[in-house]
Image (tube, rainbow, N blue to C red; front, side, top):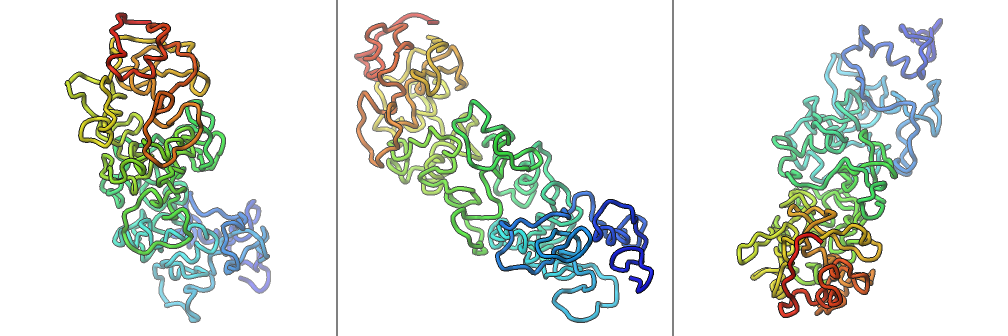
Length: 492
C-alpha cells in the first residue's frame, strides 16, 4: 500500500491491470498471485471457488455471520457477495493467534493459510454450506473411514480438513471443486463417486458391481419410466434440471447425510447401512419410498403376499440381506450388485425340476415359487404355457390402458411377438387388477379375481385367439391341469 499516489483502491502500490473487467479484490490479489509474479507458486487454478456470488440464505447457518461479504468495488457490506477476502484475512496467518508470523515461508494447512476461520473441522466451509456439515462422523468422513488416505494434492484429512478430503477451494481436479483423482465416465456422478468407489481406491469395499441401476439416462421425459420423480436430476456437469435432467448417483444419494430423516452427525464408527440410511435421499425400508418415487405403479406390492415383510421377514436376498436391511423392493431387486441386470434381479433364479429350460422371466418367479423356498406353498401344478407358441400383442391395448398382455423373448425382453410367460398374465406388484391399493399386511388366500392377475373383466383377446369362448376360464384357472388342453400352432 502507498499512503500517497496509490494506483487503485486500498491505496494499492503493486502492478495491476487497471483496465481489467474484474472486481477490485480479485484485481488486487492477482497482482501477486499470477504467473511470472511473486506469488506464482500459489495460484487458484482453472477450477476454483467461484467469486462474485451471493451466499444463498438457505445454505447459511442462521445467526452465523463470521465471514464478510463485499460489493464489486471491494467495500464490505451486509448481504454482499463472496470474494477472495471473504475467506482470507491476508494480514493474519493464523486466525487463532494474535501474534506475528513465524518469520519464515512455511507451508500452510486448514488451521492457518491466512484463513479467517480455522478449517481443520471444516468450520469455514460450513459457514456457507451448512447442509453439508452432517458428513462429519459418517463413512464419508475420511477421519472415520480412511484417516491415512490423501486427496489429489497429497494432503491427509488432518491437513485438508473433512471437506478438503473431497473438495478443495483452489486447483480442483474436476467439477464440484473435486479434490480426488476423477474416475473416467460420462456423468458427474460416475466421475466423482467412482473415484473412491472403485477397485484399489478408498471405497473399494462398496462397489456398485457389474449389474447396477442405470445412470446417465433421462427420466421425466422418458416414456418408458413409470411416473415423474421429485428426486433431483442432473446435467452431465452436475446442474439440477428437473424436466430434462438425468439420473445419476446423487439422484438417490445425498453424500453428505447418512440418515435422510435425521439432522445429526455420524457417530464416528463404520456401521453397516440399510434401507433407511446409507446416504439415501429418502427412507427406502418397508415402504420403498425411494424406489416408488420413480416406479410409482410398483408401490401397490407393499402389504401384499409379495412383500417379504408380510410373508418372509427372515427371507434373504442374493446378497444375504433380510427385508429389514434391503427394504421391501430390495427383497427381489438389488440397486447395486444385482445377480442379473434384467430387472436388477436380486435373488438366485430358480430351475425347473424336470430340467426343461425355462425362459428368464419364469426363472425369476421360480426363485421363490419352488420346493424348499419361501413360495413353496404356491407352486402351481402346471407351470408353463407351451413355449413354441408365439403370440402377437400388437393392437391389444397398452400399459395402463385397458387390456395389456406383455409377451417376452427368451432373454426376458418385452417384444411385439413372443412367448407367453408368468408376467404375461400376472402383475407381481399388484394384488387386484382393478384396485389401486396396497395390501393389508396379511398373507391372504387369493381367488380368480385377484392373486396378482394382470387383467379382470377386460378384453381377453390374447387368449381368445386360441381358446375362443372358454378363454376367461382358462385364464383364471390356468395352473390347474384338468382345465388345460393341448392346442397346436406356432404363431397367432
